[in-house]
Length: 468
Image 1 (cartoon, rainbow, N blue to C red):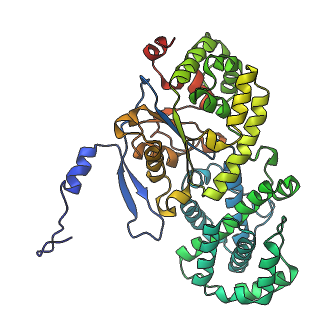
Image 2: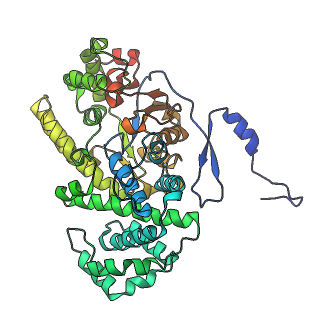
Image 3: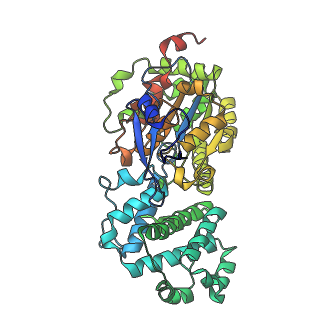
């Protein structure tokens, strides 16, 4: 609001004085192109780099931290660029550059990823390819899309581009009706022949228009693969993906063990995983440890297991994916974790209990926070998803220093600390090792196994010595 003299009037405290109180650990978070304010200013919680007396909760990212699905996101983004540039084969274009592109397309919202790629590859755009790819993706999304919110966005975009009347075409209506109960994705030849004629009607008037259209191309491909996964059509997945489809959705190393540990379900039997966890650590690039550095690891793990048996914690998984995507991914990754648990060398009754718990991710995660809980405008690196996770877990602000946050990306690390969690642990994988992760309290190239074996999940020695 303004006074009559035209000067700004703010409620106390004054914004500039408040920013000074925040200190030097402040970040500027860039908003999507269509938001009035280019940046949001956000203070970060002070880094915590000493072990805790206790842990009350864990918040962790999904893609790249909990599961291997970041490869699917990267594939869908690369396919998007291929579609709107017309460079469909590796001979035409080698693909996204891990060093140049990946730091900008992992960990942010889809909008921020697409904005970067539209800008980076704008000189290679072929308008006819872009128009056709967008329209085909839109019709496929309406016909086969299983997420209602995404379908509404596609319909809204068609309206924006003045193409809504195409949905009244009898051939399009017939296609959508036929697709409703199909278990395979197809596109009628008669529509294919009309596609370019209709696509020529599309006018991308601005950068925001190109981003809007490209996002629909991205999501159509991503959801196409999820459709195949949901229908267990692994032949279609292998035909569609140039990446290793066998490892498309798997738990990251140590995930199943850590989840069972912090829920208190392993207890002293955590020590049986010592060799497996150590091997996982020393196999990772950039690791400074050797096997001989892990003397008495089994004994230390046993103490950690007993602590969480007596003090189980609440866990939230947090993702910039929408709920539809997260549901399919988590269902598949928990199916794989159940197969892993079958081979664990633990007591039969404990294994039976774990298999029952891991049969449904909702029996393990206390909260699943997705992009559907917020807005595309407020996804990582904004704090909203993690703040919502802490709220739903029932964690008081005074206990934020007893929460551990795990992320694999630069944006995710900022989001965790912006939400007030100072004990933020970066667990980069191959595609995020080039990210700027200096905002993390710890950078563990050995991932979750390193957090358990080397850092005892950040519990101090005095606390562990008191455990019976």
